[in-house]
Length: 394
Image (tube, rainbow, N blue to C red):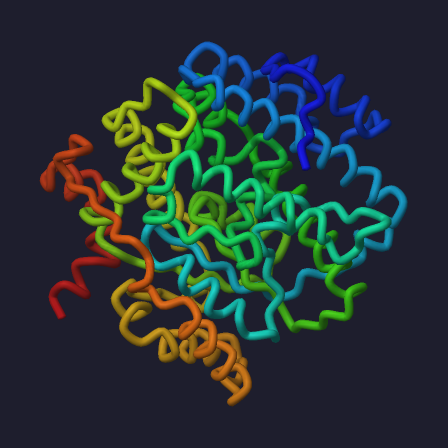
C-alpha cells in the first residue's frame, strides 16, 4: 500500500495539493500545518543531503502526515462525541533516551488494565469506515518498518521496532510537524533552530485529541481499560504542557548516567540519518542530540521543582533491567493500583516473549561522537548531582 501517486516532491504547496486531492478534503484542525511544513521542506531540500531513497521516504512520509491530519479533522467533525472521551490519570514514562523507557513502557502496557498506543495506531490513528479493526493500517505500519530495517538493519540495535507493540506517542506529535521526530530522521539544523522558537502547546492539544480518537476506537472495538500508559522522552521538556491537558498524570522518570546515554542516543540518530542521507555526520548528530537532552533535562528539573512530590516517580535504569516486576509494583503502589496475579502473568509473559538478550548489541563510544567525560560531567552537573551521583555513592 503506497500513498505516492507521482514523482516524489518536497514542495510544500504541491504536497498540500496532493493530500487534498487524495482525500477530497480541505480543512485542517489546529495547529495549522502550513508554516511547519514550509520550514521542514526547506531544510530537507537545502540541508539534509538526501539520497533518492531518502527523498522518496520523506515525500511519502509528509504526504501521509497531511492525509492523516485532513482525515482526523473530518473524523472528529463527523463524530464530535470523540471530544468527550476523558483521558484519565495516565502514567507518563519519560527520561533520557536509552534509559529503559521502552522496556518499562511495554511491560506496563502488557497489563490489560492500561490503554497504550501501538506503533500502527500512533502512526495511522484515523479509522477507515470499511476497516474499523485497522488491518490495512497494520499492514502499512509493518511495511514501513520492514522498509526502514531493510535500508538500515542496524536500527534494531537501538530500538526494538514492532508495528503491534506499544510505542512512543511522539508519533502522534509528529503529525503536527512540531515534534523532535523530524530532526532525528534527517540532519536539518535550520528546522532544528526554527522549532526551538515555537510554542508547542497547540501540538500537545492535537496530541490529546488524538488520544481521545484512539480511546474512542478502542472502546468501540470492545476494549475497556482504566488508564493510559504513555512514553516519550520529548515530554521531559513539556511536563507543564502535558499537565495542562491531564492534570492528574503521574510521571515515571527513568535515570541513567549521561556518560552512557549521550553517545548511545547520538549513535541512534546518526544511524537514522545514514538511512536517508549521503552526508550524515556523527559529530553533528552528537552536537544536536546533546544540546537537546541538556535543555530537556534542565527544563524538567525546573518544572519538577514547582510540582507536588508525588507527581513524579524516579526509576533507576539498572533496577528496570534487574527487577522489572519490582519496579512496576512500586509504580502501582504509588498510583494506588494492585498488582494482581493476572497482571503479573501478563507482564511476565511479555518478558518471556521479548528477552532483552535477544536483541543485537548496540556498540558506541564517547570518543566516536566527540564527547569527553569532563564535558558531559560539566554540562549535566545539576542532573547528575540530583539523580545519578546519589545512586553511584550507594
